Image (cartoon, rainbow, N blue to C red; front, side, top):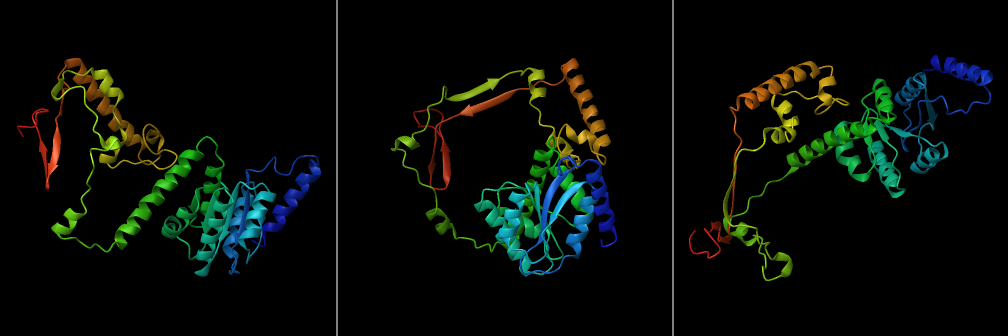
Length: 313
């Protein structure tokens, strides 16, 4: 870090001399405010992040160590930052990061918040941090990962997909965490029955809608092309254990994925050929049947009646 910084500063100085009228931020890929949170003096990892981002054309405003949340958030506004990065090595830093996230939410900030440091983790970020802040929060494993993460956040065409992919991952982690913590206490049958939902159908808001018909209806021979347009291909690929990674997650972007894209395309093409054969040979006929009947509960059972007379179950 100490070796690289002088060269970077000299390059910036020469660029400024060559074009003194150019705006400082015009050539930057983005601006990050970076800090080690209050109570923590460790900065080696943070400094490496600053250098790596600087080498990739990011402007980094390094606030140093032991930085309170007020200074971090005020600096983000002052420098018109695109991203805020927090670093911490000791356990108390985790709580301070939670505080920063809460204060960002209180200020209605929407900037991405990157989290890194020895004691941080993807699970901690998912469970403790993301519920505190509605903006993007992303755990960064090490300095080498900071560049692709920041570049993805600055990619206006794909940033929404990138952020949503991260949110989905963290939601799964959070649900898994709380599921594992559950202390399952089973009720007796009588206790469960006492908790049953009881609706007062005399109230207007609980009055059931009257359907257009009562009984059974057959929908015969759907138009084949209409069905094809309604197919959700994502579960199809998931069944075959093919899942793309951002930004190539889901159909049809999965075809561009470096790992599974080629196989996904082969599988999709085979499915299209099979569907074309079904249509050409008319070997597949799609029929649906549905039934709408009066019903009500009786104890633990649901009674379904033949008609509105409710005489025959």
